[in-house]
Length: 273
Image (cartoon, helix red, strand yellow):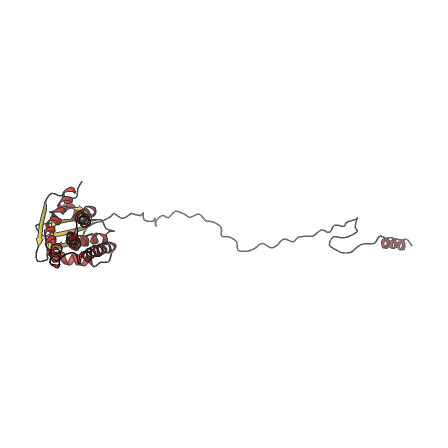
């Protein structure tokens, strides 16, 4: 069953993280652009790579075309084409919105902040849907521009490589929102926009905690009593040695004394006399 706005307002299930007015969107974007995470490292790396592609193309065409023609294509790539591409980019956000089930889609702009946006009025999205909606225009337009840069000749390479770099910088807001989700990746976040109030709301799902049984302190189970080990050592037993006489050698095993047969006979003679 899909979530409703009333479900998000249930304090036992969800906690409100942010309520973001559209008028403060630029401050929010700048805050998360500055957070150093793998998402932003990836984004700034792309900006550097696309800048290097444009610079390489510009160096390669120098000396082959008149300076006036080069300046014209520079204006196309840095000014005119980006202005034309803004509504194309925003309309491409509509496609993933529709694919995720959103219907009340609105397109707007805040010229004081120089921002353009597409939103789905009171449509609840989880993290996966939001990331999908945010990334689709970037990948489609980037892939198309890269293909044209490598296929088209001469000055068109220069104007389109300039557009590739500028469009990537224009996607800073999308990547800032991705960085917001990365920064809160340990949370289960749901979001919706109220286009009438021009507000964006972010809620965190409250995960249930594991209940552990409390120990029974009133009637504890009896413990088995074991005798304590004795620390006294038993007295050593007395070992008696039995001496055995060897008649053949006339020797006691534990002595070196040898009985002489002649001596014994003389002793007997004295006793008889």
